[in-house]
Length: 72
Image (tube, rainbow, N blue to C red; front, side, top):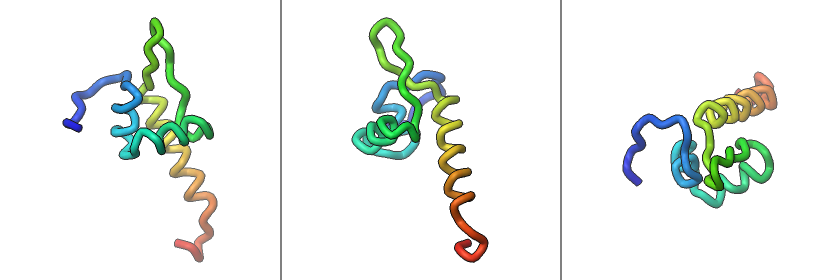
């Protein structure tokens, strides 16, 4: 897939690419709410880059909090 120009809203494939995951894994992350659900605009499903960034930050924060200093 070619590099993405800066966009605010991404298709499913673009959102998966943006977080460096395959679409199947991305679907799993959406299903278990680790990634945001899409926004529907006239029947089209899109993901907001800002929500994806927030979800990634939350994953990072949860991973950091689950590690003790001895794990680092």
